[in-house]
Image (cartoon, rainbow, N blue to C red; front, side, top):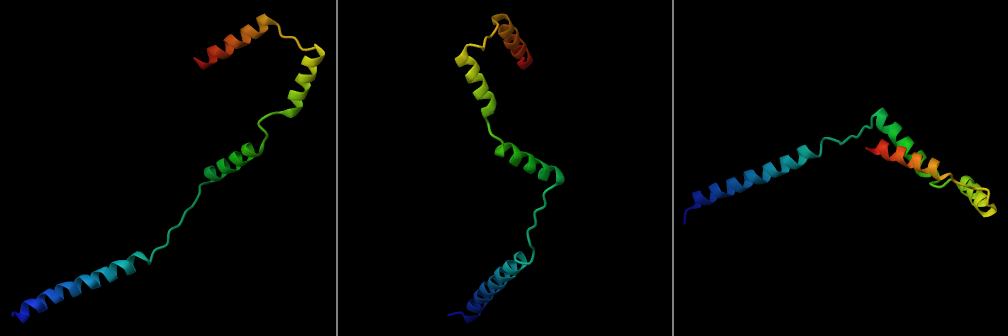
Length: 92
């Protein structure tokens, strides 16, 4: 049985244990930091304001429903068609 070979193997394993411990210690020294730019903060404020605003304007909907029910609401076919075409041409 060769004892010197065993000592060499033990030394190799001993060195690896020390390296692992050193790597772990180095990684825990630094701290992560996050900073948000002014533009990013402005975007967050705008996004929050939009999300809190109602999607449907209830006052307008109620007014139009009342006009339709009373028969006072009328749409000119030519006016509707011209606006529809103008909106279509904007998307192209």
